[in-house]
Image (cartoon, rainbow, N blue to C red; front, side):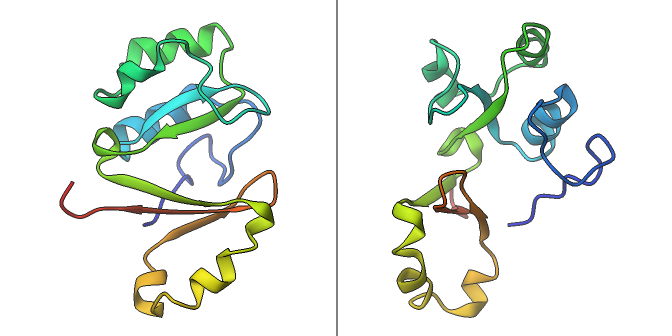
Length: 131
């Protein structure tokens, strides 16, 4: 899976201040259900976030989040709402990641999106083809 952020804010990185353009790019270009997340917590900043397990946020909702300066981090709702997106989360400094990696053929591993987490773990993102 390849996410290209080069056309968002003219930079290829996600900053501490999440921009409206980034939200729109992830939601409307990549089909991901992206929500603002609480700083230093692994949960959405919205009390009604469960409604987004079946529908993407609207452009108006994103504008409201930005205007209220709600997002400082993002979270992504996995499942059908994000086109079959799933994530394996290797906590504990990613201690089990290398052993798992050794089990995955290179041609499959090369199709995954791998990222380091703020706590030193690893996320492995992929989409199910039939979702």
